[in-house]
Amino acid sequence: MSVETITLGCRLNFAESETIRRLAKTDEDWVVVNSCAVTNEAVRQTRQAIRRSYRERPDARILVTGCAAELDPAAFSSMPEVARVAGNNNKIGSLGADPETVPAGFLGHVRSFVAIQNGCDHRCTFCSIWQARGPSRSLPFEAIRDAIERELERGAKEIALTGVDVTSYDHVGMGLGALCQKLLKVIPALNRLRLSSLDSIEVDEALFELIAGEPRLMPHFHLSLQAGDDMILKRMKRRHSRADAVATVDRIKAARSDATIGADLIAGFPTETEDMALNSLRLLDDCDIVAAHIFPFSPRPNTPAARMPQLSPELVKARAARLRSAASDRRTSWLRGLVGSKMDVMIENNSKGHSANFAPVRIEGATRGETGMARMTGHNGDHLTAVWA
Image (cartoon, rainbow, N blue to C red; front, top):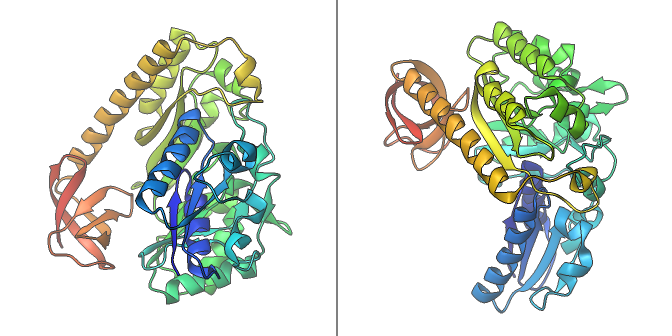
């Protein structure tokens, strides 16, 4: 029997989906829809995925899990297409897998995501994920080490550590930086280590040491910044200021000349004035952001931000579009500026891959898993073209 997974949302969801698919024990055909609740649009897309899957695979049973299912199980249970709903606490074991298994995936991919942490102790006013994922829990070093070694044995060439709030990792006094240092020390085969989204205010000294001196740590850092205006950051209940964000980026770039910065930014947060919105727009330049994820504000149920004075949907949409346009222009300029340079590249599939600093690269004829230095020969839309150096 087969288990298919449809995943929405974060990298942690993708790792969990692969773990469910790989370790499921069932004699039935299932489609697992691993949902996201970060925005209202994500919930809508979850419903859409359920209905589409039912049409395409009418003989399979549909299980819905993930954050949207955790927050509103009754809504998904009432859908006629759905056979079962499982909350996040029952996600891994929902189809018979060992619930203690460390989520890791993807099977057969050269980049694999390994979960090191789940949940969140912060209470950002726009976010409901802490309600869906619970408090922050960090996995022990040995479990993470074993999961990484298994992924490397399966053919992974690069490991990305993921979680809901990875910079809050703390297991018996070991923080994220110390965890990474120890992993790189005890796993010589771990040649490429990446980190998923980081809370800039939580980057610890041990991690800064790695950024400065460890070539096996890939030099692309995606930061959860959310806004570039101090008043909006305060109303979001973020724990950093605009100056803190800029200082973190300056320190990263001073330590590692080839480092690149990605960021999450929310457009149209309640009470946001035009001047406040422009502060977020200017943050793209001030933090040299070349990979921006722009989210139009979406009021989530039972969150403080949903009770604040809202902007019109039209204004939210317009501000998101402006941010996306500016971010796209910066990214295009960055990619064009890399033409002629040499960079370390890993090919993931169909001649396509990424450089160490996460520029998308295509090398005609290259095979999955190939790594090495490549010379960038041109820029074509959303990627660079290159030849092996």
